[in-house]
Image (cartoon, rainbow, N blue to C red; front, side, top):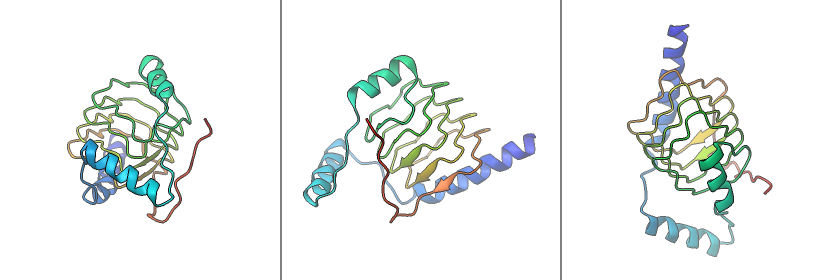
Length: 159
């Protein structure tokens, strides 16, 4: 069992690390500029719903919601229920996601540097272009983790 957890963690780290070198964290000004640029090209990039972020921080529950570009840096989300959540471009730097359920979450271009993902469930999560320097992924459960192709359309959640 321990060997399986180590192997799973190693595979997860390799998969995420191969993507993390492609994305560098950006400043808020750069992110804002990128948003304006994308919107001027006719691409709609949703912002996180403030009520969803507040709900997550107070109840640790936010299944299937839009947390695109949410700033959750340093947040204690240990044991949170985040199945199917949209974390595209989210900042989770130094957040505690230990034992969090991220089943089928959509995590692309997110900053996960120094995040605690110990015993986090990432089954069926879609993950790419994430910055994971210093992340703790010990005993993370990543069966069915799906890398996202760059041409795959971004999915939207109903609000």
